[in-house]
Length: 193
Image (cartoon, rainbow, N blue to C red; front, top):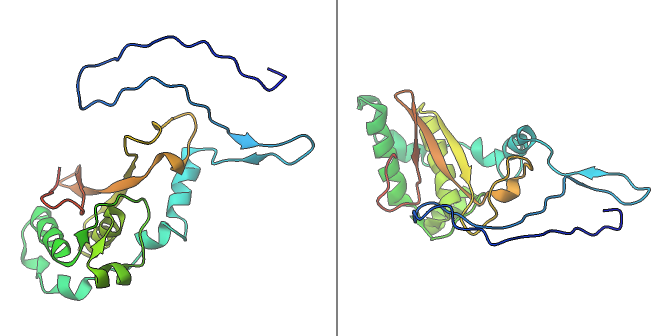
């Protein structure tokens, strides 16, 4: 309305499913596409998913980590990956090497710290570990990408209002035999899924 007030009428909504693995909730969310005040410039927030993707790959927090050199290159060379038959064997060997070097600190993040610090401490968030895993897989000529996601305690992702704010963590997407599989380097007993 012109007076700046919003009026809503809500009613009790029933849960849409009884399956425990599906996160269902009733809520009303508000999103701003831009900010602007009388006789001032209008500032847009991230306006499209392409811009969100671009911001994830730009130099800075995320893009630099996606382009980093494999910090475990010397150790990985000792694995003799070229003698292994399949990408799955290579992925398994790389995963085991990484797990022997870095332990998960039980924190979820979307961006990582300096890898030399992580490797020196021997502990890191899932983002720290997964950025190293991506660099190792790329070094072995295995296509790997971050697959971003949000934890359940965050707002649900809205297709209409793109923003990196929805996402709080990621797993690694690996192309294996023309199929996209997922692996999370922070899992103690994880593997390709």
